Length: 395
Image 1 (tube, rainbow, N blue to C red):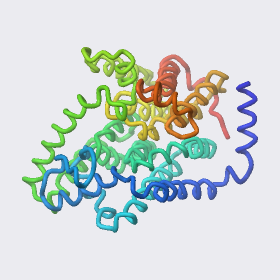
Image 2: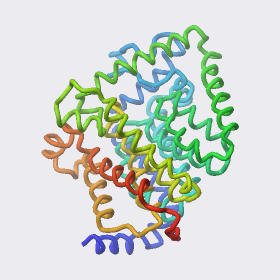
Image 3: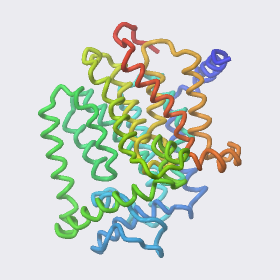
């Protein structure tokens, strides 16, 4: 059955229209427009982002609640006030539209600029299109985080460590997630240059907002940001909107608040790091791409702040895992991809049975389950399979 599905999909997407980059560019340009036009008034996240700039401009707390302006509170770093500035000063609808377009095009560019094969790029862009729409309905910055991680890897592959460091520090100063770009450190051929560049960009991005907002204010906001992230971790524990992760799935299924997530995180870190011991495999492109896939999944699976609309990050990783392998994928792998698409991507949509979504998927963070299974299989493959002995697929 799975081979038949594979054949049908292959035949369908081999048609020139579906393989044409112009088609995919138009699709990814249309998705943010649709997301904006269909929900112009449901833009709470964009309001949070917008007011990061205006609150910094006014010199008031970035992390206090402002219920008359938006729901929830800001969890992004002070440097984000500069990132959002071009969109915050525009009329709200225009700023929202251009923000969504910028996010989509940033990730599109990162995928196209990558060293993935044409087949891999097409697969990612089609497979993740629905998840992109889900993310843009919520104006999710995680779309940019996915691009930042991809570009961190790409620049290290191209020996442009200065710009790799820029991406890593940018992601870290905005949402911390970008720090996972350090996972590619051992693939760098210019490690001292990378370290120096990381220091340069860290200083530059720490100081840059001070030019506009003053040093005392910025330092106080960094302190508030640290406290904000610490307290948010506790709030996320049993939330139905956050902790959509491996951590959240275990927590919500067990209904146990007594244990510490650190034990699961440590186990995850060990599983993630074991492949680094296979130094002889580093020279294989498929092995390095699979570690990129692992990184994209790890950052979502082991964070209590992961939201359903943030799954654009791990789903890009899932496609990279599937397409990077230098061996033929089997029926179980195809089944896993179908499972990911149905449960991890489609479950938030109206096409998915509402009862299952409200009674099972959301309460128990089951959106994470297919990605967890893929990540476990990925860790097994990276630990035990020989990437070098297999010929690299050419598409």
